[in-house]
Structure formats: C-alpha cells, structure tokens
Amino acid sequence: MTARDVPSGEPATVPTPAPGDPRLARLSLNQRTTADWSVADAIAGCRSAGLSSIGLWREPVAEAGIQAVREWLDAAEVRVSSLCRGGFFTDPARADEAHESNIAAIDEAAALGAPALVLVPGGLPAGSRDLRAAREEVTAALERLAPYARDHGVTLAIEPMNPIYAADRGVISTLSQALDIAEATGDDVGVVVDTFHVWWEPDVEEQILRAGKRIASYQVCDWITPLPADALLARGMMGDGHIDFSNLTRAVARAGYEGDIEVEIFNADVWAAPAEEVVATMTRRFVELVQPYL
Image (cartoon, rainbow, N blue to C red):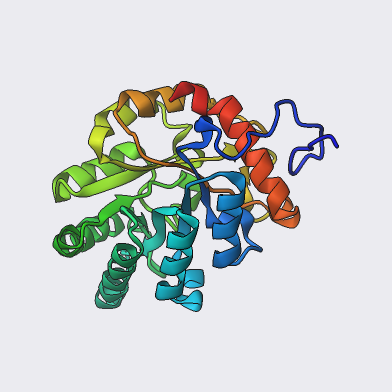
C-alpha cells in the first residue's frame, strides 16, 4: 500500500523510516501535533514509530497525573524533550499569580525530567498599547523566576513569537529580543528556536549563532499560505510551505545544539488526519528536510 502524506493525501516521495533508523535519534513528537492522542497514546505512538522523545503539555499531563506519565515514559523508554508551557508574564496586576503558576511548571518539568520549560511571553495587558512596558515585565518576571529554575535543573526557554501574535500572545517578537533578555537574566535562561516564529527574521542565522549554548529547544514546522482564519492554526507540515529548513538547521548545528528536534504543528487538517499517518509523514519529512543538515 502506498504511503500518503498528511494532510495533502499525495503519495509519499520518500520511504517511511523504520523504528531503529538512526536518523530518528533526535526527532521528538510535540504532543500538540497529534492533538487527539492522550498522553498515554502519544507516548505509545512515539515508541511504535521509533521516536525516543516527546514534547509534553502541562494540561494533559495534569489530567493524567505526573506519576502515571512518568511511569509510562519509563516503560516506553521515551524521554521528555520539553514541557510547554509557562510564561504569560506581561500583566503587572497578575504578576504574583503568574509567578506561582511558573513555579508549579518548573516543579512539573523537574518531575518529568524535562530539560526545558517553554515560555510564552504573553501579550499586551487589557487596554495597554505599551509594548516596551510589557517587555520590561517579561524581564522582571524572569529575573524573579530564574533562581528557582536553576535550583531545580530546568532551563527557562523564552520562545520569541512571530509579530502577528505580539498583541495577544507574545510581545517578544525576535530571537534578538529574546537573547537580549536571556543574556541580561542569567546563564541558565535560554531560547526556543522555532522555525515558524523566526524564519522571517532578517539576521536569523547570525542570531542563532549568537544563541549558542542558550538554544534550549529547536522546533520545526512550516509557514503556510494563505493563512487560515485562525492564525494559531497556520503551522504546516515541513515541506508544505515557505521555510528553508536547510539553512536554519545548519545554523542550529553550527551553534552547537545537540538536543532533540521537536515537530510542533497546530493545523486543523493535520489534526483531522489519523495520528499514525501524521507521525509517519512527520518522520519522512524530517529525514528528508531537516536531519541531513544537522
């Protein structure tokens, strides 16, 4: 039977890598790519496909229970590449609430063995147009949080987000801005290099090299057009959009990053497809478009 790519339904152009293929050693399934799978299903799906790591999200982990998730991971011999998400630092009226939530997220990351907690900075507070003040809130919150993360062996990973999300989700829009904050905060604060968010940045390769050891996570998916009505669902399967994965991946490799590479896709058509076919397409596209450049 001919393998077909998700979501296009077109015949696959490369064979599906078999479990044990060494090219899959650093590939991680971010849990949101297969949104219909429970935590247990996603861990089992990783094992079945020959993937040794998974990026987890706090809400489904909390629903399942950290101890149960830890047992499933250990039984499947699957590690956690990152935990998503903390952050949302920008509202000064809720600073203490955000801090306590992020303390809990660090505890969860440590319990799961996740090396990094992915941080979504947060958007403009209600009624505000002051981007500068919102970015200052992010820096202040990280300075407060960093010692606790350091004591628990968890890297705080700032995720710069595409500027289309600056108002409501991520006031840190460039890798350069994220690195400015990380460098001012401490050696244990890092950044996420997410191709969806940074591919457009004019000096992105230089900023990746600048990041060096601060790269806490490398996440890949494509930028597709036309954008859907819900821009949060604009992430495509690698190869279906406009991103040059070869140059970005080469830069990440030159920067010295040796960790897992997560595929994180928010896309209604991908979510509607059978999860096993999504993972199979993901592995094919990874070995074709990303892995050769590591």
